Length: 133
Image (cartoon, rainbow, N blue to C red):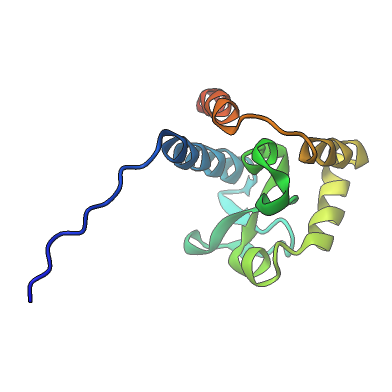
């Protein structure tokens, strides 16, 4: 029996914007944290190869909400092992973020965690902003 082509649903406007926004976040953060052309893991500080590069969240997506999901202050480059296997390596992430930015910065992120907003509006605004960076 021959199967026909699977019909794919078209992506919603929100999903398309999220994908474009994530591409911009990756571009900005990986360029920003590249030292001498090499990317390093924010938590274990090992060099990250191309296929091993990921962006990790200090405050995870599941609790951060729309304001923190694509916030550059909440993202740092991580290796697959730290981001996936160690669940973001939170304690080391916190220590390194504290050393890099200070306690005020971390407190600001936790304040954003509790806020609610309409995601699509924030995503459109961030996409336009990040394209200019």
